[in-house]
Image 1 (cartoon, rainbow, N blue to C red):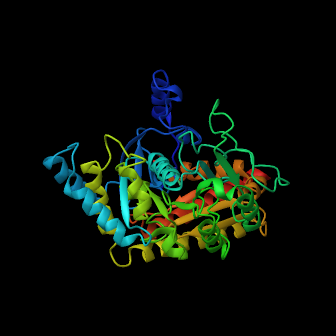
Image 2 (image 1 turned 180 degrees about the vertical axis):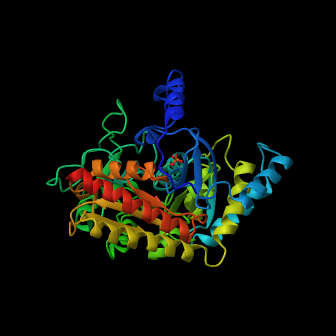
Image 3 (image 1 turned 120 degrees about the vertical axis):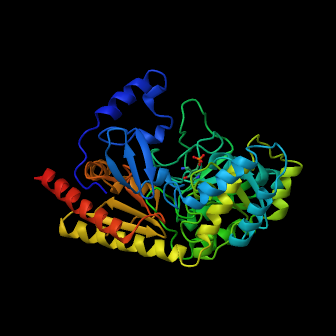
Length: 440
Ligand code: PMP
């Protein structure tokens, strides 16, 4: 890889200007605009690397925000997709790969008895909420502050980036809309993550009207693992109140091990939402879970979508799953991530900077936060972390050829090697050195 510093962004800047005249802001997802010093325009990618249109090469730890668990352009997926393209691109009828994919998912996801396929994570979340409402005959949905479940209106409140509720709020928290004009969300309740007593109070007040409780079992914002015993308590409480428990494993799926967060923590939801790494770069998502709840899809809560079970995407997902099932796949990723996490913590110490590292499977989060700060929920994360410094760290890394999202979540892929971790740590050393210098 090209380890010389990355300095020229002239072509990216010019292209963003050109695109900006016909695409508002020049980016097709608001999530891509935070990259500093400028959002980049990419030309090609392979394995663990991407190259922009100025010719700069990057070791990629953003993985397109999650899908690329096998790295860029994984050969088995390309072969499966190409073969399916030759056989047919879309039928608008059943085909064998969708059932094969559903069979494979029921094999690897412990709580999955059946599967419904969609295209994006947001859509599959929406489907899961529909099924839960139809199965319970209830309307309310309970979610946690700071978790993300896609951009669709039912659920797009109080996610990452929104202002946290005041600490004294001790029952439901006021929903904060992601988008102007969404209104007050009368069907949505918001609670604090990792707070069993708070959840008990919400359920005492509203339990009999709640259709579903949805969570990221490890929220990506901060990679805030559940406190010991917390998931078990949530499972128990939702069961007692007849609430459908939904794990949104769009990020954690396959990344915290083959069977996701539920396999890692041994707590099993009624429904699981999968996306991102399921297609290894091709859009496909799924709701997997209880057979009776998913049966709503064929009756009271019809599940529709022109591209549902897309043959090319199903081929990609079947091929990806075969890779994820290879013995040692997840332990190798855990080891790489562990080495990266340890190295980053150590570098923070060496530079006298307050770097705290969280790791869950192939996910590593670096945070600039005073050591010893209690970080169990979103409000604590927002008040304690220095996000400007995190963005500056990502920028310094980008200038050294390491691509990391401004919020500093490092994602590992099967394409990363031990040498890549060494390179990333060398670049992090130099980047932290620059941040240290900026302080004086
Ligand atoms: N759930 C989670 C946990 C996610 O991280 C995302 C995407 N970042 C979604 C749902 C929505 O998925 P998509 O962007 O594919 O609609």
